[in-house]
Amino acid sequence: METIYLHHPYKQEDVYQGHIVLALGFFDGVHRGHQAVIEAARKEANRLQLPLAVMTFNMAPRIMYQQIRPEEVTYLTTMVEKQRLMAQFGVDYLYVAQLTSAFSKLAPQDFVDQYMVGLHAQTVVAGFDYTYGKKDVANMSTLKQHSKERFQIIEVAQLAEADGKVGSTEIRQDLETGLLSHANEKLGYIYSLEGIVVHGEKRGRQMGFPTANLMIPSESLIPKEGVYVVEMLINGTMYQGVASIGTNITFGENRKRTVEIFLLDFHQEIYGEAVTVYWHQYLRPELKFDGMESLIAQMDDDAAQARAYLTAYSPYI
Image (cartoon, rainbow, N blue to C red; front, side, top):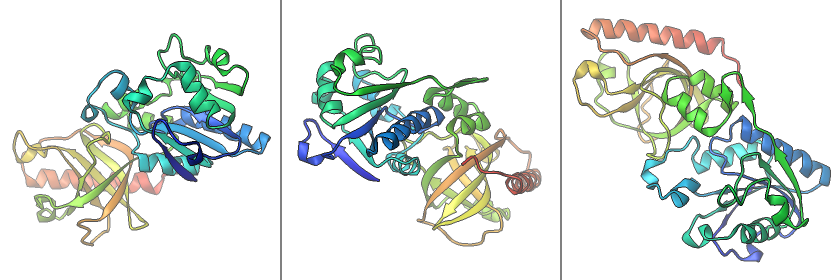
């Protein structure tokens, strides 16, 4: 897959020159609803024997259009993770449009002319709720008028399940309330976070549970505080473990939140390593213990539960 960054107004020689099937959306999380859009576009691209392209943005559109501060927004997927997933789901070209003042001022017709027709789309595929401007004048119902019959349109219906709509907002709510299994089901894969291993207080080492403390990008959504079953990818090898998100309240109040990973059967120094943590199962909330012995007993139990869960685990994808 080739990633092409577009700065408005882009140069025609910077884009793929042949016809394409173009899928549109922000695709935060590349969840199962998004995968349905990509799958429909991939099927159409195969039928027409054309490349499949996806266009997304470098940041959440609400930062520009609702004037939200960037540091107030967290994402289910970083751009690197989004690229990996797009390639996995069969995308040939990923267009990343930079949201700027000039871009945001595009009228709906100009957006269609420049970013659908201009990218040589023979078919445009998007979800039922896709908009390309103010939603009352630039939605999937108005796209046919703006297309002027220059390309075909495929609208993908809403994906919903027993526990509600499959959407980025709903997945965020699941992660923030500890409903990790619901989030993973909607994603269609195991939620992950990338980070760098940094030095911590080394209390885990003193108790016989050395942990890897992670520095996570501020824009990444960290799940609810608590203890989780995880796997961690280090230099191409996956290791089983237990993660703790919280403030270590057993050791005092008003402490900074940390993300710590205890890896099972692992005895290496990995400071400075870039790692990926896969969040499998929520075990319990963060608890305050009376002393070290009760904390160690609970950690032994957490490790046993993690080992049992991951032994029986079957991948989503």
